Amino acid sequence: MNDTAAMTIKQTAEEFARARERHDWREIAGEWFEAPVRRWIGTLDADGEPEDDTGDAITLAVGMREFLSLRDVMLVAAICGERTDFTADRAIDFLRRPMIRNNVRWMENMLTETFHGSQAPDRQRCMKAVDLLLALIDRLDGEDDGWQAQPYATVAYILWWLGDERALPMAVRALACDEGCSLAIIVASAIRAGIHPDRTNAE
Image (cartoon, rainbow, N blue to C red):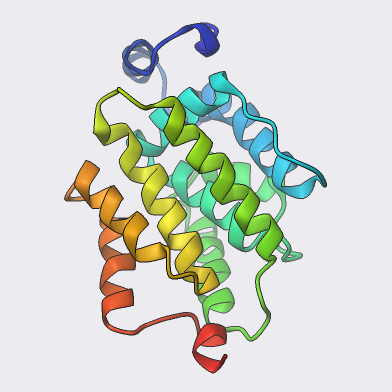
């Protein structure tokens, strides 16, 4: 893989498409996404202000559009990262093998148990993820709007999780970029139906 910091998202996507023709997903996940995902998790774990990395932003934007398992890993790293059953190694295993039964169950349990739990999310961690995703979106300004849909939808989901009223506008932005963005549809539909995580319903 070339240095994505010096490449446009279109060039990166074209290189990624060629890689998909030559390698299976586990190889691609390792070569393209493992290091950026580990840095993403490490940044969320660390104290202080997050660092914005152009190369990682472009790589992750391509991956979030092409493979929803990458988007899901980035999402749970933000909203479930403080759980003892969330580790970087476990997240990478899900990224490499998203359809394995144990990994599917792990992801479902992470989201379901946190949705129905009473423990408040780590707001600082969640907002750090939001800031990083918005910085990623800024780097895509002027590109095909479709690249911004999944980052906007992920921001919308995190804000909805926090009970933040900015969630719906972010979901609408995602749908403006891609009207078929399923995560944005879920968030917008949930908000309009008055559905929120159990913890926020109780507040």
